[in-house]
Length: 371
Image (cartoon, rainbow, N blue to C red; front, top):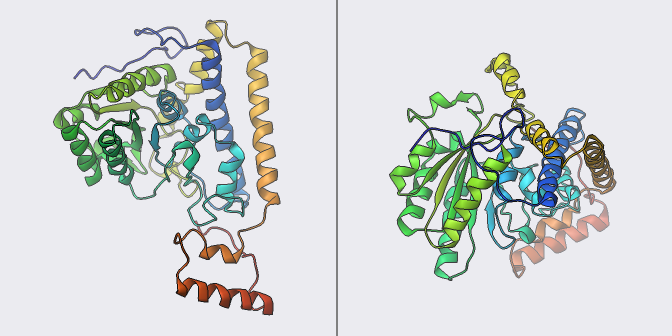
């Protein structure tokens, strides 16, 4: 396998070596809007965390092209097993940004009822499976889902996202080996941002690339410029079509860079050279795509300003709505546990109801998420 990066858009927005995918103007503008909205969400959420209004956040700044581009190749009935740095996928699949914000606040409108860590979204209506903190667990889950769909003869695909650090986990081997052996309709997207928190890529593997690891599992490995949204989409579209046709899985290595911290709890200046970060800022996936659309006569400066202002306004409305909603009621601890409430839970629920009536405990709770 060649270590060459698949690239459609050059770093200055000009056409590169590969032909651009046939997307309509409306689709190109939607791709751009979702990427801008994802960046806007990042910027606002980091501010909220620093102000103590939410407890934790995981930014995806610099990686919008890799996950939004790949997910754009999926159909509405396909399944997504994301990592914790992929909010653009939920937005691209039609989840309103306010629902992501409810989850970050863990309020009464949070569909996980405040039980999951912030930024660990789950949206059944979008086939967007809950994000997990343990590294690489989603890889085997996606492979299993893909195999189940194959057994049921469903024409759907599972796509999973993970970082370069996940390729050192046991679940990476298990998931890819299983999918390769049984030709499961699964697409594995490794967002290689160069760092597993503070561990650089050279501390993960001695392989020339991560895509080359696909050869050991009997599947194609594709290496793509992860900051080129059209190149990522092209690679993902081919992989999805291949999986849907029953030809098995594909491993995509999207080479990108995490421009911000690993999370709001991290300080990347302690382990990363600022010069490296500055060099990657010149490869910003949003700016590159903007330049490309401008060259194509699709995105004017006026239209770009409208999109960005609309995204900011959408985020502000979402924050205001999320902050108007109180915390989940204490009684929700008994909900979504069993399909039918057990006698023990029924008894405990009655005990809680009595305590609430007597004022021994309050309906809400106080305190921020502890990270």
